[in-house]
Length: 85
Image 1 (cartoon, one colour):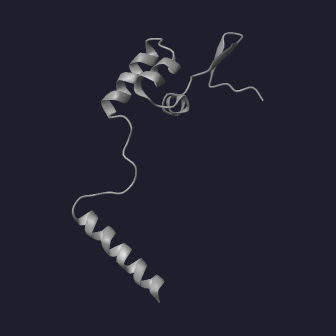
Image 2 (cartoon, rainbow, N blue to C red):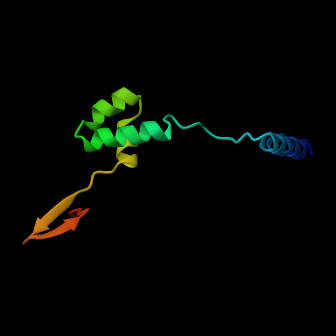
Image 3 (tube, rainbow, N blue to C red):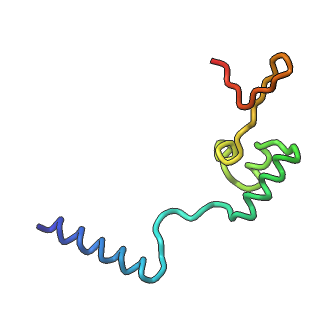
């Protein structure tokens, strides 16, 4: 009985917050402009580790956002994103 009341009050509170324009969840660490700048730095050849330090984000976050494009060429034919098994 008490659990049902807690759930109802929680849902009512979330609905009230949404009505005021609030959304839940964690805020993004970087703005879209900062992500764009980080992408430009990567394309310019700056090491991802240095960019991670500059923007105070994890190295794995940069690899998720900007994956490394691997390509392998066999007999002149380029294969994008090749991953040997």
